[in-house]
Length: 416
Image (cartoon, rainbow, N blue to C red; front, side, top):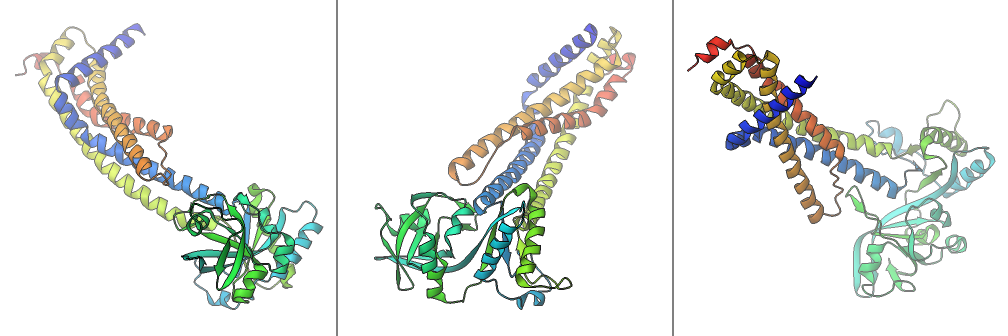
């Protein structure tokens, strides 16, 4: 045991003395490994960032909410089976809520009707375009994840009476009323003045597609006065236990079929959507990044491994007499094998450490320049990178090290 430890530590000492004596050659040899480790860590960081941003966006959207709509979120080739579906009605939400209340241990808490329209809004001389208007009722507070930073949401009475009141997203409030309070101010929506009763806290963006802060929430009955029935309603249904979404979806399907009066043999004339549809669309993006990253990583590590193998062969040739002398003095094959193998692994580990440092600095730069991007340099990536570096060193250094260990001491001592 003591001899094995001595051989191991002595091999490390010799390996690092050789690397230090040929510093420039070692750095150039490690470049392939450095590029490969940078590629694999940046790929992993990008995928982690996508996952973090996606989960954060889902939390803003509500990861415990099911959406009853005419159309599914996924692409459908047989669109003609969906186009003639009957529209979602406000009365459906009322009937669903009665079913939920009458169902023991129901996984569904409340159904809320929501209508959406894009529009421009004005306040004085300031006009904003591309604002999403959401018409709903007072139960919206039970499904929305955003907090009200100032003021309140509208009441049941205001919602049922269609009073001209509204709740602004934080970006809308800042842009319409810069430097002054929004509460009590009026917002012009299609010529109708709406009084501001609340402002939502800042939420951020959903997958970079749209901002939750560029929205205005109105009573649905007030919104109908502006657009009539030219809105495609949806029902947002709160789930009591988000770990049982599939069971909740099955329960909601049965309840919605009852509301629609569908017979057992009929196809559903509605769709129930959940965040899984977004995940299915996101997976190809992650797969594409992973494939591209693995290709670049594999190519870089392959080139790096060839370079390390070549340099190790050169090192064996340069030190053939030294190997012969050590074997003549009693050094065993495994000692010589371990010495050159550790030298190859050490070069790879140095390259891996430099690659990790480059990636870390890159991540810090991205976080500083684009703070809205979720960039996370995880410890698991560091571990994977070090394991990849060690394996690259073992694979590339084994053949030259094995050749060195099998040298005949007599032939090695006569080598010129």
